Image 1 (spheres, helix red, strand yellow):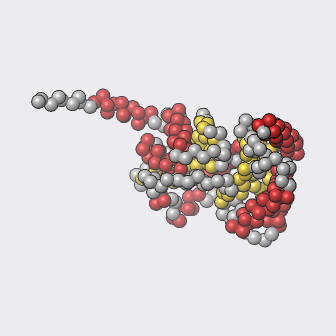
Image 2 (tube, rainbow, N blue to C red):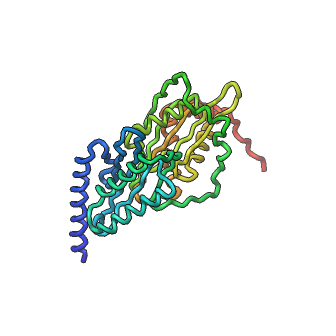
Image 3 (cartoon, rainbow, N blue to C red):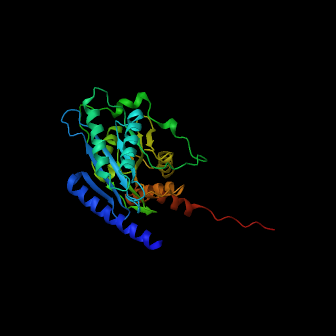
Length: 318
C-alpha cells in the first residue's frame, strides 16, 4: 500500500513540475514563484482591455497529492471582487475542479478568472472599494488582551490628507528587512520614513508594484507621524485580513516611541496554521528592522542611562 502511495506522489510531483513549466512558458513575467520548495506560486491576471482594465492576483499552493487526490489551495486578491461575484467565482472554480478531477486545472482556473475580469470590465458597474478575498481556512484569533485600536482609524476629517495634491511629494526610501520563516510561512518587514499621510500612500503603492509583495497573503502595516504644530501623533494601522495584527504592530511602535516611520510586514501563508506565533513573528520582524535602521537607538540609550542612574536598593536590617 505504501509503495502505491509513493508511486502516486511521484506521479503528482511530475505532473506539478510539467504544469508549472507550461504555465511559466505561457504567462511569462505574469507567473511568479513565491517558494518553489513549498510549491507556492502566483500569477497576475488582467482583462487585457485597454479601457477599464482590471487585474487579479491568484496565489496557489500545490499540495503533495495534487492533482490525483486534492485541489490546489488558492487565494484571489482583487479590488473589485466581493459579494455575489466572489461566490460566483468560487463556485466556478469548484465546478471546474469536480469536472476535471485528477487532472491539472490551473490553466483552466486562470482563464476562468480572466473571463470574469473581461465580463466585469465590459459591464457598466462601478468598481467597489478594495477587499481581499481569502478562500483558504481562516485562522481564529484569541481576542483576549488585544488592545482596541479602532479609535485610531482616520476619520472623515483626515481623509482628504490621502487625496492627490497639486504638488509632488518625494517618495521615501524603502528598506527591506530579513525574512523569518516558520512552518512554510514567510514574514518580511519593510520600513520607510514618512512625514505625511500622502507619503504613506506612496509607499504602499510602490510596494505593491513588486509582484511578490503584491501576492503576499497579508501586508500588515502601521505608522506614526508626529505633528509638531499640534504636539500630537497621526497614526493608523491595517490588518489586511490578519485580524488584530495591525493593532499589535501599532502598539509596538507606540511602546518603542518611534515617530515619522511606517512599517509594513508581508506574510506569505504556507498552508499551516501558526496560531499566536504569527503575531510574534510579525512584531519580531518589525522590531528587527526598526533596530537595524536606528529608530530605537534613542530609546535604548535612554534605557541604559536610566539603568545606570538607579540607586542600589538598601538592604533592610532585620
